[in-house]
Structure formats: structure tokens, C-alpha cells
Amino acid sequence: MTRDDVLTYVKTLHGRQRHDQLVALRSLFTWAKRNGLIFRSPTSRIKVGQYEYAVLQPLVPARVAQIGTLMLDDIDLGNRRLTIAGRVRPLDDLTLKLLLDWLEHRRNRWPNTANLHLLINNQTANTTSRASNHWISAPMRGQDATLEKLRVDRQLEEAMVKGPDPLHLAQVFGLDEKTAMRYADSARALLEQAAETGPVS
Image (tube, rainbow, N blue to C red; front, side):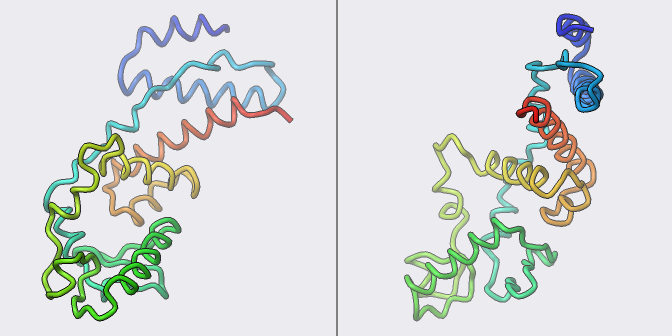
């Protein structure tokens, strides 16, 4: 089977079916190459596509509000846990680092504040009220890297670093089962592609 054969076949497929078939073919030929049955995979340089972005979830105002109402007591650094809207979630390495950096900045910038909200600014540091939804989302407006894209990228990165385990993704990010499986599928495809195109030892 040649690369042209694969291209001819996948041209007859669309959407999820094309994605699944290419992932399956990549997996099969990666195994064959690893075991010395073939010299080069005919799926090499054929893009699976950006199917993972089908799982994008809009950052609706309710979610911004949940971030804005986070309190210092919602953070459990010792157990690496964060409670959002009553749901306890484990903190991944990146989120923990960012959280520690923010807490240090918060202490240095507003050492005498009585505001117990996690996110405060120059206005709310002198009160006990929460920061506005607008203030939380404003820094990302007009940027190529929107909050939605950053969230997708972060969840996909977690799946690639920790392994494409939908249960882990669902627990860490609070995803529903179907969305977690889509991220895991996308990460698996990218990992297989990286293994195929990586240096041969």
C-alpha cells in the first residue's frame, strides 16, 4: 500500500469517519514500522486534521462568574485541590504553578487587603466584593489566543503529558464523558503521529 492509496481511500471519507480511519491506519502502520515489517508508513505526512477543536466549549458568563467568585478558602494547596462551584478538582502542575505565582503577586501588591476573593484588582482590593466578569475576561479580548483556545490547548496538553486517559481529564477539568473521550482521542492521534515522525533509533 502506498501513500497515494491511502489518500485515494480517505478522500471518500468525511468528518469523524475520516478522522477515525486515519488514526486507525496510523496506529497500524506505526506498529508495523516499529516491528520492522515496513520501512516507511504510507500515512506519513497525511494530516489527521484539527478534529480536537470540535470539542470547544464557549466560556459562557456563568463560567466566568464561577472564576470570579472563587475564595481563598476554595484553595487547598497541601492536597493540590481547588473547589469550583462546589466541585472539588485536583490541581495539575501548570495550574498549581500559576496559582502560586498569583498568590505571591497578590500578597506583594495588596498586603493589607481584607478581600477574601482569589481574584482581586485595584478597585476590589479596598472592598470585599468580587472582580467583574469584564475585568476577568478583558485581557484576552482581541488576542489570537482566546480563553477558549487556551483552555482547549491546556486540556489537550494534559492529555498528551499524563497520557490520553479520559477519566483523568474528566476529573481534572470537570469534563463530561464524551468531551473527555474526544480530547483523549485527539491526544492519542498526536502522540502516534509524533512517534511515527520522530527519529528512528
